[in-house]
Amino acid sequence: MAFTAADVKNLREMTGVGMMDCKKALAAADGDMDKAVEYLREKGLAASAKKASRIAAEGMAYAGVINGVGVVVEVNAETDFVGKNEKFVNFVKGVASTVAAQNPADLDALMECKYDGTDMTVTQQQQEMVLVIGENIKVRRFARFAEGVSVPYIHAGGKIGVLVNLEVDGEASDKVLEVGKDIAMQIAALNPRFWDKSQVTQDVLDEEKRIMLAQMDNDPKMASKPAQVKEKIVEGKLNKFYSENCLLQQDFVKDGEVTVEQYMNTAAKAAGVTIRLLGAVRFEKGEGIEKKQENFAEEIASMIK
View 1 (cartoon, rainbow, N blue to C red):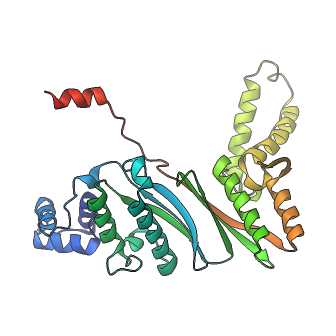
View 2: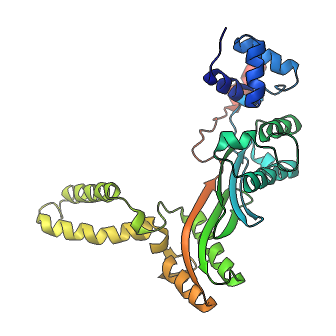
View 3: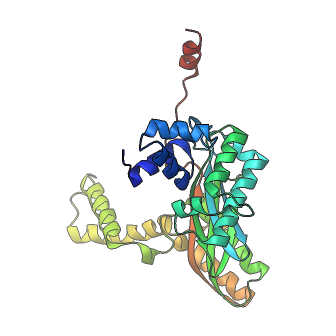
């Protein structure tokens, strides 16, 4: 029985085993998925196949600068407790080091990279961690900045990881790094949709205008006002939209009298440099993953039947 690339991918997702081993297993099993899983378990590669199907929405987000390269990664586990496990934390840092050193194109490429300092792939090392810790563990995503000055920030022991990337015309002094950390903390706290108002696309603005006009049409005090008056009010409200959703236009959390952009420019001038925000990445652990809702009463009832 022949098998496809999709079969290989499905087997990998079922077992957490590397792509090449999954291909070998399917070839040995003549394309039969169940037999391929058995083959991997017999080889000791999929001893934790059942764990791979369990929801992993905890773990940690980690950001760091490794040999001048900025990296932020998210690695998930099943329980919050594992996020504090020293072996798990070291695994996450090793994943970050692998990203920094090997510059993988995407997650699949990362999983086939040699895990930093070993002859094992990241997939194989991840599988080892599943066996050691006893929970499903998954490397979920990463980002990397090789150019500019990167400044990492980790909030609440790995609940949020932020990496800010700056262009600095001058020395990247402690003051510059402080600016980067302040910006990263702002991003962690307020999670802006955009870095600058110039990134807000016309379709986003059109949608915001539509909503604002609809709100006025539904407000008895505003509904009867002329269209041109409503348009002027909307233009004024868009400034508030920028200040709420765009990082550089937000009020700086440490000093509400200035925006983030004003703070950055003032601090840069004091440090004798110019600073420009090139980009940033914010990972929050478990973001977008649907967590299993436990019903302990049902669980206990099922155990005593």
